[in-house]
Amino acid sequence: MSTVAPPDVVDHTVAAVWRGGDTIALEPVPVPPLRPGEALARVRFATVCGSDRHTVSGRRAQPCPSILGHESVGEIVALGTGGARAVDGRPLRVGQGVIWSVTLPCGTCDRCRAGVTAKCRTVRKAGHEPLHSDWGLSGGYARHVLLPRGLAIAVVRDDLADAVAAPAACATATVMAVVERAAPLAGRRVLILGAGMLGLGAVAAAARAGASSVAAVDPTAARRQLAQRFGATAIHPAAGDAGPCDVLLDFSGSSAALQQALPALDVQGVAVLAGSVAPDAPVAVDAEAVVRRQLSIFGVHNYEPRHLTAALNFLHETRDRFPWADLVAEPRPLHDLAALLRDPGGPMPRCSVAP
Image (tube, rainbow, N blue to C red):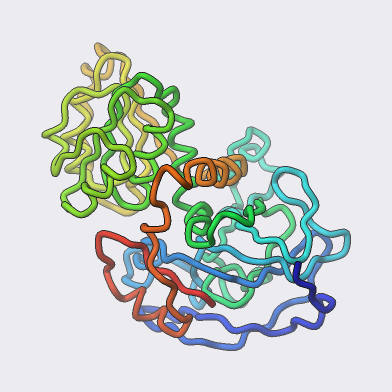
């Protein structure tokens, strides 16, 4: 177990600061004194989510300047007065490996009280906050991250590799929320659109849940082949090629693919949409088909604190069944981040940095 000096000794860090467009520069950033209930983590590993590429390419609005990055594994190096607790209630300790939620809710609005904290009316988000704010050190593309009071934090087991745990903070936790919304999957025919990081996680989750069949759709051959390694029983280049299904999970963000897939839903079928996080063409829904086939269509955006723990448990339980580590590339140094974000990215593996 590592030890550190008192919190006020760590007063500066280095971060990759986004200053608009594809301009990212390594800069010194002050570390504020920790307040009660807060924690400071040293970032060990961070994966590059597609939404950050959308930010630097102009497809996604974001405060500027800011520190991007929200799929990270860190190590607790300092705790504020009174310490801090993990989402399961355990007190955090210096030296523990942790991941943390994308969302920081207020905890008091009507949505938070209803258990929908991801849609808190004043939600703040890791890797999305202005640099010159009281949570400027919110992004994972830095040597340190401030973890405010109220942010869901989960402890990473020592036998789970950082490359496997990092995507749990966004991709895998979102998959857990989607699967929960679509449940039950056991004995049902599941069709998954998109075989990127989220889609492959959903393929594995459906296989683990005992789905009678798991069909994956992706136009990229390499991704379709990966889907088979994660439990897909059928693969298709287009949604129109897939047969009837009971559960449709969309991670593609493609309106065209979704338009093709919706007619495949059988009686009392359930569709959960999670990939449409950027503008695309409208999707026409046949209202008569929804009524006559008793269909349900849901949307999921982000996740709840319980899904953070569920994601880590899922990855740990399936670490010997599915090749999770193959989905993440060897980490590059932080000064390579600008090039990684400008790169549109290939089929897989996911890029990463080790700040």
